[in-house]
Image: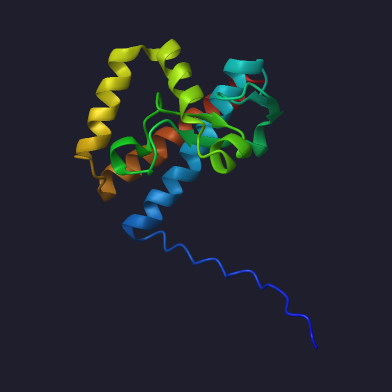
Length: 152
C-alpha cells in the first residue's frame, strides 16, 4: 500500500489592488517595524530581540509581531503600543500568553491604557480605507528605514 504524503496547501495570491491585499502589505511592513523597534529596545541591535512574554532572546527574523488583544481586528491591528515582538512559541503555541502579556502592558503603559484598549477592541469601530492604507504603507516604510539607519 502506497504511503500518502501531505501536500502543502497552495498560498492564495495576494491581489495588492484589493483592500485585503493593501492591508496585507501594510501588515508586512508594520510587523517588520515592530520587530526592529523591539530589537533595538530590548538588545540594542537589529539582529537579536527579546520576547515580550517569556523574555528569551531570539534572532529578530524569527520573531513575530504579537497582539496584546487577540483577533487582529481593525481596532487593534496596527496599534503600535499593543503589538510587540513575541517568539513563535509564545505567540502561536501558547496563544499569546495573555497573563504575561497583560503584566508587561501594565508595566509599559498602565492600567488605564489597558482598559481603553479593551474598550476599543470590544467596540471595533475602526476600519481602514484605501487612502489610509497607502499612508500607513508610506509611514512604516519610512520608519523601517530610520530604524535600519539607527541600528548601524
